[in-house]
Structures are given as C-alpha cells and as structure tokens.
Image (cartoon, rainbow, N blue to C red):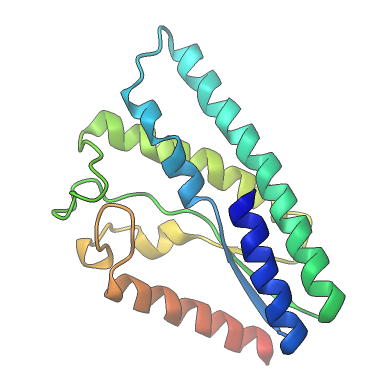
Length: 178
C-alpha cells in the first residue's frame, strides 16, 4: 500500500502539471517476487499447493483492483480520454547465466511452478480489464522464445528486451493516436 500510495502521489503531481493521453500500467511482477519463498515450501498435497496459489492470487486481485480504481480516480480528475496500455507479467528465464541477484533454482519443477504463478496473476490482470476497452499486452508473447539477450537476469529485461518493449508500446500508442 505504501508503494502504491507513493506512486499515485507522483502520478497526481504529474497529471496536475500536464495532462496525459496514455497510461502504461505494468504491475504484478514484484507481487510475485514477494511470494518466491513459496518455491521452497513442501505442501502435503497438490490440493494444498493449489490452494496457496489461489490465496495469493486473490490477495493480488484485491490489491490490483484498488490500484486500478485509484489510478482511474487520480487521472480522470485531471485528464479526459486517457488510453490505457496494460502489460501483463512475463515468465522468468531461470536458466539465465546472470542468476546471482535473484538466486531462483533452475529446474523443470521450479520453472513450471513459476509459470503457473505467472498465469494465475495474469488471469487477474486479464479479468480486470475484460469489461473495459483497455487492451492487455501479452508480455509472454514479447519474451516467448526466452531469448536470453532479452533478459539482464532471470526476471528483468536487458537493454535489448527493454528496447523491444519500448518499440511495442510506442507502436501501440502511435496506432491508437491516429
């Protein structure tokens, strides 16, 4: 909540000074990192493991809904006709050679667990915007081939990955501006 409130204050200060036409929303990756400790847990049953994922998904859904509402309230107080560009979360690249900052074990089991968690959070993002004319940008499509050059480490984009993301976002903003 503190991070969200700080970011919303920055947003409010910015839109008061100069109205905006587009918002790029990329939220959720750090929420997933906060529950990375679960990868070391040993649930007794598959049901228990899935239940834990669902609990974290529901908590994220509540937080995400509050964030969207707060952004909507902040932006539309000062700006009209703002276009949203919503990014979902992309899968990590656990076999990246620069794995010292985020030492997540590289195994098929861990990769599948990470992908399941990303999918659960992405479902929240997609559902949140399904009733609105806000397009969700599938970040897994951008990173689908897991080209290691797109990653600086297992979870953060490199300069090449960032450049690719920027090009995609720019083309969407340009296309929607016409």
